[in-house]
Amino acid sequence: MDALLTPILSYVLLYKYIAIFFVVYTGAVIVPWPANAMLLAVGAFASQGFISFWISLAVAVIANCLGDYTGYWVARRFGARFIHKFKIDKVRFFIRLKEELVTDAGVTLFITRFAGSLSSITNFLAGFVEVPFMTFVWPDLLGNFIEPGVALTLGYIVGNYWSDFSNFLSLLAALVAAAALLFILTRIYRRMMRKYAM
Amino acid sequence: MSGNGMNGTRRYLRYAIIILAILLIILGILLVREYLTLRREQIINARELQLSAILKSHGPLTADDVAVIQPWMTFSYINTLFKISPDYLKTNLSISDLSYPQLSLSEYANYENVDVITVMNQVEDSLYNYLTATSTQ
Image 1 (cartoon, chains in turn yellow, green):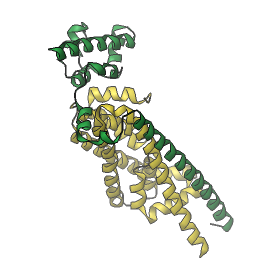
Image 2 (image 1 turned 60 degrees about the vertical axis):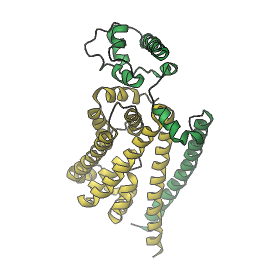
Image 3 (image 1 turned 45 degrees about the vertical axis):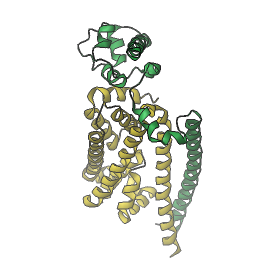
Image 4 (image 1 turned 180 degrees about the vertical axis):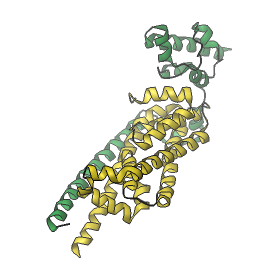
């Protein structure tokens, strides 16, 4: 089991929803906690009657959204200065990703909700490039409902065997993250090809 | 952006896409392998999808399952998991820590200044005795 996961599980058992909120919120902002594995365990705890499934889901969705909004607002408030100072606006990949976000913010935001740490980076980028808040909210909310919902439900179904599925879920999350990144890069590439052909 | 700059970006993007595609295939293979391992170990199989199997995986644990005890588990969680009397472990292990049952086994081991493995063994033995005694009644 993940060395980070075991102390987190102790805190979840001790402080329940407060611990879930803290881990999911900080994970959504930037900290790379094993949040999906934790939610898998929380789903199992819910099936064992130790914790409420619905409250856990609500707490995870709210914490995930608030974490994403924090990243978005911090970048929107201080992003321009930071980008200019570190000359990030000169990096070609950043320029392309910015174009992608501005052109198709909804799809990019929704897909990156399933892409682990890429989700936090996209929140900051969305703030940097000033994606309108209402454009940010809906795909974020939908993605944040599905992602923890899947982990919690899987944990609930497998119950006492949840730890056997921990590796499986981590691999699945990595696969989805790689697929999301591949999807975005392919779109950028195709857009570039079209622009170049003109 | 200049034509050269555009070409450079396209080249890097192409490399990134190829690397990601390879990574995706490797991850897919690993995922299938993990799935097959779970099937081989009888954790997933067609029958497990049946409602009865799901219900079984949610039932209280028995004396045969005491090996699931881990250092991160709290006494409160263990009591719920095995459906045992809340004060049984406290009395049986003579736990005086006031935060019981909101206390993990590793915290308790630190508090008692003993090895966590020793604590786990004590808890497992106590649970085994309790569960075998109650199941024969």
